[in-house]
Length: 379
Image 1 (cartoon, rainbow, N blue to C red):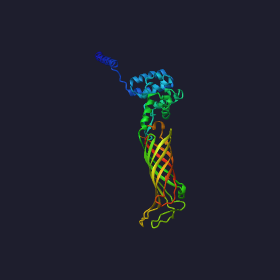
Image 2 (tube, rainbow, N blue to C red):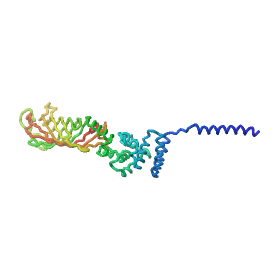
Image 3 (cartoon, rainbow, N blue to C red):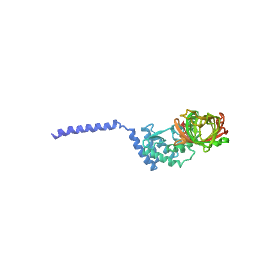
Image 4 (cartoon, rainbow, N blue to C red):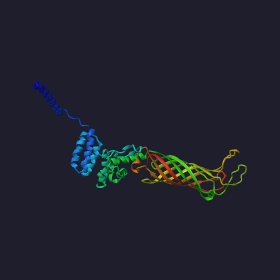
């Protein structure tokens, strides 16, 4: 009876085991890329730290075969190639446009803003690549492609673009394309506006009115070396000493007053005569209409204000220091960028406030202004 029970059970178990052997022989286990990536990252770092570079190389070959078009593999390959002094053997050595991907932005959840980074330090592996590239940066020749790669993948953004724009790497296609883009950007007009504060300084007989503070606003555009602006400004505060003016319509006599308000509306043009890095010097000049209010309008008595108007031909210089926000090297020519600047301008203004005979003093003026300005598009 026992034999009759054991024999069928034995045959059933044998058949099951035999079938399982065929499963292992005929059915290939699926390898998932995300598993390969996670483990390959870990073991690559271990082999690299232990200086087991041949094992690291074999691992990368396996990793690249299982997970195609994976940028982590490329970063590890380049790190290992530079470490072994074999970058010239890498498949992208003569394809720098693929080697260096430009305009890589990442969203930083902590700051709530986009950051410009070549290698996002969001994983242990990426931070490892960044750190090791910066170690190798100090060991390679500064004029070699190895050096440029360590700057790029080590997130040395400013230094990378400064090197790429230098004569050392001007032969690279990626550098030539960048210069072409820069020239194209320079042909695009930028919108410009600025706030200004300064001083209105009369000379000649007009200096009796004294120096006055002024504030204003300008708006316009810039293209290549040329800029065009419309300027509105007001100088204020009464004169420290009384001066003579015709302020009474009932008679033609000169009377003493200390009232003063000066308005300026004009058009300016500028030409860039010097530019070096963030510094710029412009020659500026323009036409304007000026008016000095000698007496305010009397609303109760319905008496109009008394003014002394004048043309204004002006010329001078303006210096600007540009702030390109994080990196002058790459932001300078990036579409949609906003750039701010601090500037100072000085003008000599040829005027004549005696034209309507309400003011008897002749003389010209000097205006000096500090500016906070903004350009959208890029410089």
